[in-house]
Each structure stands twice: as C-alpha cells, then as structure tokens.
Length: 256
Image (cartoon, rainbow, N blue to C red; front, top):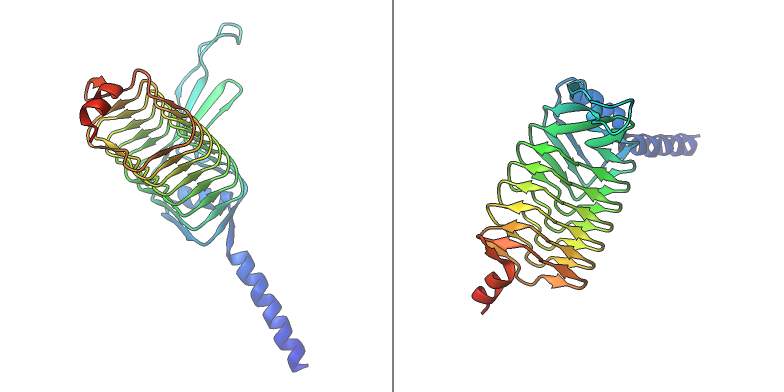
C-alpha cells in the first residue's frame, strides 16, 4: 500500500510539473490585458500567440474601396504596454504581431521591453510593420519557419546575436535607429535586408549566410563590422551605400 501511494504521488507530481511547464497563448493575452508584465522561463506556449488581439486594438484607418476592388484595407493597430520576456521557451504555434485578413490589416506595436532569449519558434513569426519603442532582443533563438520583420521599426538596437534562421529572414525596409547586433547569427535561407537602414552602424561579426545575402539598396553607416563573416551563397550589394559612398568603393578604400 505504501509503495502504491508513493507511486501515485510520483505520477501526480510528474503530471503537475508537465502542466506547469506549459501555458496557452490566450492566458498570456489575458495577462497583457490586465496590465501585467509577462515573464516566462522554460515554458512551452501552446497555440497561436496573437499580439494584435489585445484589448488596446483600435481602427486607425478606414479602407477606401471601389465596389470592394482595388482599394485600401481597413487598418487596426494594437499597443502592448507591458514588458514581454521569454527565456528558453518554445512556441508551438505562430507568433503574430501582424496579419492580413481579407480587407483588414492588423498590427501590434510594443511600447516596453520585448525579449525572446534562447527561444524556439516552431511556426511563422510575423512582426511586419511593428514598432519596437524600447529594447528588443531575440538572441540565441531559432526560427524554424519564416521570420518576418519587414518594415519593422526598432527604436533601440535589437539583439539577434547567435540566432538561427532556418527559413527566410525578412528585414526588408526595416529601420534600425540604433546599432543592431547580428553577430554569429546563422541564415540558412535568404537573408533579406533589401532597403534596410542602419544609421548608427551594425555588426554581423561571425555571421554565416548559407544562401542569398540580399543587401541591395541598403544604407549603412559606421561602425560596420563584417569581421569573419561567411558568405556561403550569393551576395547582392548592388546600389548599397555606406556613409554616402558605394559599398564597393568603401570596401576598396578600407581593405587592409
């Protein structure tokens, strides 16, 4: 009997720990709506985490269409006004701060710190058009599907150091108002930085590009750190400029 009781307690303990190590995305959204900071470590987040669904959502633009054709979409924006921190967490579903649903566009902006450190994103991550008005960190994280930061606006230098992008990393048209950190990042598929702007410099030290490194039309400023970068695929620096001069001229002028 004593052995049976101990076994039952052990099973209950394992079940409790398993349950305690996971949380649903809706629970996190509820926490944000209550104005509580979000901080989780060593957790699995179940289902789609949709930041555009927070209660601050409001319509900022009414679409203009002609019989439903060739018109602009309605636009809704949400503001996340609490700190977001995930450490060593796994996201089983999509992580959305942007999506387009029929004739409406939904975007989430972040007014406080956002941190996803050493996390795994199993599905798509969508931060298209998002504004990060404070710190943003995605260091040592793995993106199994597309990481979409197209048109994203970073007020502080985001940290993507040691992150792994298994599919396309899309930073096209992104704005980095401070120096971003992509040191030792790994890009297995296309790294799209076309038209991206780096007015305070950037570091890609030790980064690896396995496919197309697309920096066409990008604008760089000093300091630019490309030490020990591995370009294992194609490179496109056409029309790229740094400090107002062509990228190729800059390389020739500054080579050792």
